[in-house]
Amino acid sequence: MAEPRASEPPSAVPAPRPGAWPSAPAPALARWMGDAALGLTFRVVQARTKDPYTASGPGAALARVYYTTDDGWRAPLFYLPPAPGRSGEPVLLAHGLGGTHRDFSLEAGRCLAATLAAAGYAVYLLEHRGDRSALPPEGALPFSLDDIALHDLGAAFDAVRDHSGFDRVLCVGHGLGAQALYLRMALAGTEGMAALVTLCGAVRFSAGVSAARNAGLVATLLPSGWVLPGRRLQQLVSPFVTTGEQIASPDTPGPVARARLRYAAGDLHGGVIRQMARWVASGHLTDASGRLDVTSALRPFPSLLFAGDDDPACPPTAAFPAADALGSELVVLTGGWGHLDPLLGARAPAEVHARILPFFDAHRRMCWG
Image (cartoon, rainbow, N blue to C red; front, side, top):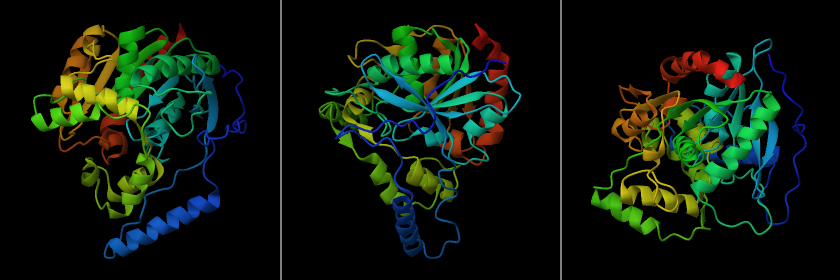
């Protein structure tokens, strides 16, 4: 069993420079007031429902292991230790667009992060330069997903290996997190990676649909430094959401869907949106220049892919090319699975999390060198 190496204590959160994003959570009073206001709005709007406003809060604070990129960004990995006495192979979880690390840790009793930790894995929840917890360097420039894939993931892998004592890292990516991992593999190879699981990671897009194509072309004109306050917008709409179907996740119960919008929402950055717009316009996952078809650069690698049959962002046909390139299985989830359902849906623990565990168990020795 590898012993985790020393890291900064959880309390060692650096003070942000003037104008930098805050690195610490909102004060307890402000959070309580926000919860109370949104909960009251929910009760007024949904007066007849007996559901709670949210299924759970954000849970206990997690320890942080910081990494610094070669271009000066600093961000945390939220750390969940393995169950006592277990071997502790590291797993890095990368969240999707408009989310945060809490997508994997929202419901303490049934979330993927807790499931992996209970099975003996050391779990590291990625936050990157697109998240509010990240601290930019002086004169930071706008960024694309390429920067996250090359700089942030590379530095995060190094930090996980140093902290855990293992040579390689098991990886899980959801949505944009999966696409960032694909992009890293295409641009920098698989050094430091032991095995890969992706959830709802599209590599093909409906460029033939004129409306989608036109929207993509318009989005490429967005300023690269522009930031959409997706976190605040998602929080504000949360009282009006009654079912998971309203957030393209029909298997996710209403209280869980509202908890996701309230506690796990993130902002959107212009450089990333512009890159995604190029994918829609061209029909395939590319680097920021638009010249590299990422799928064509992928090589066989131990992987397990999931796609939902009712996911508008990643229908099975959008994920099949990645499975073919990686030589991996694509698990098609049938019976009404949307975009967040593999993480938060009622069936996720039994049908998704339970399939990830044996896959990682079969490849955990790959972490040892």
